[in-house]
Image (cartoon, rainbow, N blue to C red):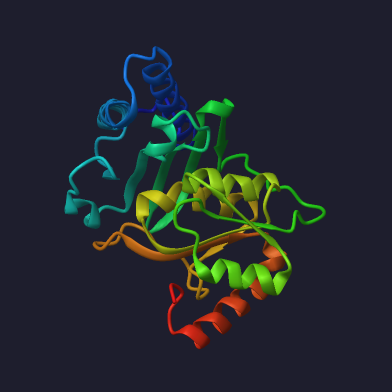
Length: 254
């Protein structure tokens, strides 16, 4: 393990560096569409893997863009990353894509960073604070797969529903106060959640499954069915409406 960088600093630098690589790949304009997205995924993944191999060679690793090595299950420390969350948004020139970097220790994100490169910002668990004050009265959901349970919750609260791309971008919208909650159903993987959840929890936001169960990472099965990130003062009410929806429909997807 390199003594040059603390875990916190390394997490933030990886998020920053990955964002710069991705902006560079897109900025020269030589690739478009799927080729641009795949090039961004590949280059960012390769750089992150090399950085961690040099600075944290004993730690486990889980990434959307790499074959899963189940030796990570025997590690207390595992880096869970998504080099480019929101490939479609990145490739089509939108701003709602993100870089997810998280160090998970014994299943819990202890250091996390979410980079929003087009906005020039990295949100870090070491200094994150969520916006307080008046509610925006908005819930952010998947732009491509808005879950019915979110519309049910929105109707109960009298909140608007708005769509966005990357999970990291949506979570940071809540941290910034643009939205009061991020509701997801329909499935994600650990690399979609670990960094945004780590930053959200560190900022004082609530984060859990839609049934209220706590989130735990570095599992053999990396699929997670649903997610709630919200202002803490809304958590009980939203979870109550989610339970009501589940009782009525038998599934958060129904």
